[in-house]
Amino acid sequence: MNGGKNDVIVVGGGVIGLTTALVLAESGHRVGMWTRDPLGRTTSAVAGALVWPYRIEPARQVGAWLERSLSHYERLARRPDETGVRIVPGLMKDTSPAGLGSWAARVPGLREARADELPAGVGQALRAAVPLIDMPVYLRYLKERLRAAGGTVERRSVTGFEEPAALAPVVVDCTGIGARVLVADASLYPVRGQVVVVENPGIDEWFVASVPGSTDTTYVLPQPYGVLLGGTATDHSWDLRPDPAEAEAIVARCARIHPALAGARVLEHRVGLRPARPRVRLEAVPLPGGARLVHNYGHGGAGVTVAWGCAEDAARLALE
Image 1: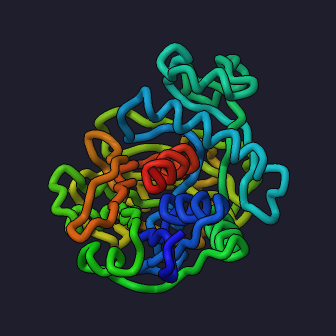
Image 2 (image 1 turned 180 degrees about the horizontal axis):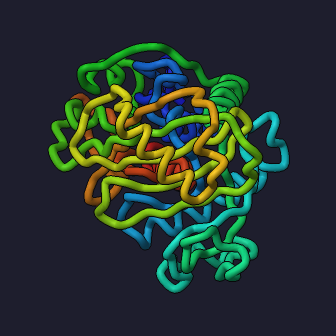
């Protein structure tokens, strides 16, 4: 331990930053987390938060991160009211078990759905019970647990990493799409996602249909606050304004799976920017002056899915 206030400063307050800061703090290190946005305004707060890989590479590492994250989520699901984590059954359309990787063996009961379990018009789907997370509750839980471990949380923006590096020997970059400017990473780009939250007409299982390369996806995710309906995946769009026409199309797609959704009262519109990259950037580099900078960003649409596995690897890099 050094004589300063912090051993590590984590920059970024979404699920990646919070989880990384928590792993470090619970390992006995003095950790400060700097976040530009309050929890409710991070991209993580908008997430549908079904634990399943989406728009993230490389597949082999993703599988290992996912398996380790699953172990954490399964434990947290024992206290759903406190953590926001529940294990929920559902259907993943047009997906083969063979294409999932070794992590699928960690999912209890994952199998081909029977014909009588499929919605009208759906020819094939996998059935599985996986973590589905109420992100506002979960982010508050992580923040409280971080503080209980001695970590501090500060609303603070940065224009570079020299400022935190002057206050701690290790800085962890969990800035998501912000890293495009902070480290001039032109390979990082936003994938805009829009969702609609409606009152729940009685849906208790999730459904996801995603066509690779399409800007439109269909997902129905029952949450305690309503049903989250999605979605869109528009590459290179920075627009955070909800589009009424897109919202109408989202509800229409989801209503083809669950007709009761057609008349459900709309509660909220949300838009977030997934931080996509050809592969997750998880590496340590030296900073001028001797500090160590650990990058942990570029998780695409699967930040929640791999958060714990990536946080553990980032913590190891931070403390080498």
